[in-house]
Image 1 (tube, rainbow, N blue to C red):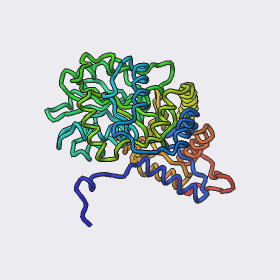
Image 2 (cartoon, rainbow, N blue to C red):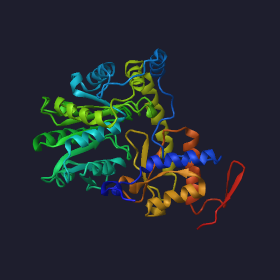
Image 3 (cartoon, rainbow, N blue to C red):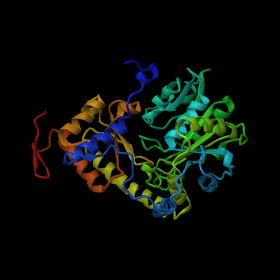
Length: 405
């Protein structure tokens, strides 16, 4: 069978594959613990459900405009003004089927073949393949100081005449690092100076801990005209625990949004009108659910970090936000795929290999589940890895025996 060179270069999403594996194991009745997941376990906001149900009851579930319904655009305008102190017009907004599609359509709009897109490592697993799908060249950049916090000089060294865009995701998936305000200010100014697109992936921007405040990229932009190359990405998946609703958006200059709308119109048309109505309900409804989720996640983070620090050989930095921590397990194996598979096979705990995020020897663990999953999952990991662990472990009525060194 003949498939394209682009298709051959694209790997399956490791996070989606893990979700599928967890579902299969659960169907078999296995006591699996999924610490690799990327979706909060809290319920979607009641306002979102009521809004969707109200529209569903009308029976008028029709096509939506390719760039989103006016009602959702109004809600996004209000959200952008409240959280970014930036008043934009409806023509500056496109609603997509998730923030992932908004990023993908933005890349398709700006990239020519062989142009480069720079992003700090560790990075979200989909960035490299999304860029490849546009025939672009992904350029991950590891901070020279060995931390999870990039510096402008790290980025600047990799910029060439082929550089078309830089993607910044803060707080970061997988590390949970919230980048310094000075860095955000510097990268905004640098992109304006060098006439480079800056894609701000802000999907976790309110899920930030320890009294920190989200950084507003517009605060440092000097060019707020329709020539601006700043693209802001957001959505309802993470903040409102609405991952399955698949509604995200981009805010950018009008010409760019117009071109993105043309592309999206031929790809998927507009997002489901029913799900857009739910997003309107979430954005315009009671916002206490966001703070409640943030507080729960901060507490879960504290529990996970304390447990990880009790595991000999594991090095971990405390995340500033999101619902992930990125821990260095290289003392137990340099190959993160092998280690991740080992933990599934031996103790039924799913984690995401660090290699998928551009850093070998690490595992991404999520703390967006319940405390029981966090504590039991890490107890199983400790038993599997620590040579001083007891020889036996019970998972329910099943007895496991260590048959490895």
